[in-house]
Amino acid sequence: MNLSVLCCLPLLAVAFATTAQPLSQVDPASVPASTSATPATAVAGCGRISVFDVAPRSKDLYRARLMNVDGKLPGPTAARSYRVNAGKHALEVAELIDERQFNDVQLRQRVKQSDRYKTIELDVQPNTTYLLAAHLIEANRNDIIGQTYWEPVIFSQSSEACN
Image (tube, rainbow, N blue to C red; front, side):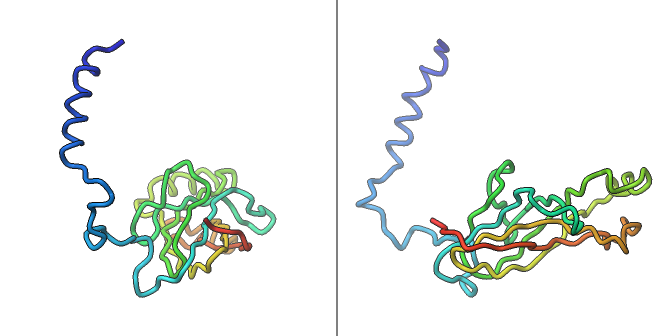
């Protein structure tokens, strides 16, 4: 048993007890509003953005990583689905296209890219899940530096309750 932790816990409890207020005493006007969607685009309800890797390779669709939503981290990095308020959102996306799709020179160019993210606009409808992917554009496969070899896409959407 670590005694140094035990000796500090009562002090933390005192510090929290002196600054906390019971919910009945909290002024609702002092609580900040949710910032998941901008007020101008907010719609009642919520939807989900999924990066679960079920994108069909036959359509040159690959994994994508959701870096941020409206400039904010969407949630835990290991998550495969992110809840967002209904309304318009800007999604910043990174491609996770399988390395086997590129030759050695292209792989080195991908690693050296400083800005590997692209933005896609999405108008999230209530109770809808959107599947996000990175689309490999075969015609631009060699333009790694110009970043035209891929684009973020919503390849599927489905109705699903969002609680």
